[in-house]
Image (cartoon, rainbow, N blue to C red; front, side, top):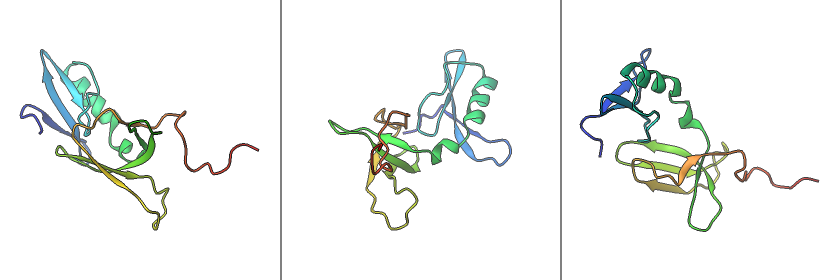
Length: 129
């Protein structure tokens, strides 16, 4: 549930919601749509700048979903609301690829994370020659 003291922040140009700013002592913390803090307590303008700099492009990125005792799997964000986060296995742009959806709590758990360069890449079918 979204705390009552979180203030929605919108992009200045198109008013698209890109996160929240929440009070923290004498400062403010920028919070992503996933519910994660993007800054330590800073002044209001710095929190706005952090959200504006982050934007929404990360929503289209590949993410990794870690499980118990299995390799992380590539996923894409499908839905992000203060009620839930829905991801699905990466279909690599194929309209007919089978996908599996996972519903996660919000804020998104740590097992959902951005892809790192050392993560497995299912697009590699054959190893090096």
